[in-house]
Length: 116
Image (cartoon, rainbow, N blue to C red):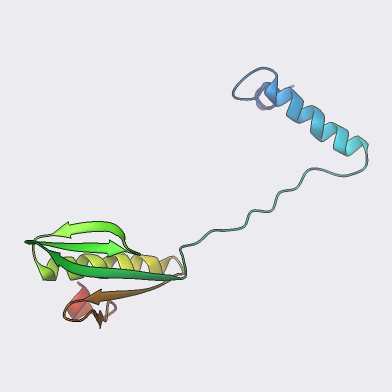
């Protein structure tokens, strides 16, 4: 028995947990059910993400889906931060938009002149 088999049999958290897991797999094989299979469903970002830029007092606040994302000293920095976040969401397969005052206009976060 190799060192990796020994770790598998003992388990990482205790001497009996891995043994029980191994016995369960052996029982499945003996019953003709084959090895235990697991399907992982990938969880990506939510498909529609909104970044909002708002002025609160003297601080520009950015929210992502109505949750705090960041505070900035001026509007330009806040818009850039929101655009960066929107591009990151899109890079991982989601869809994003950036809304900023006045009247929550949609900002083109892909435009390098605005977003960088």
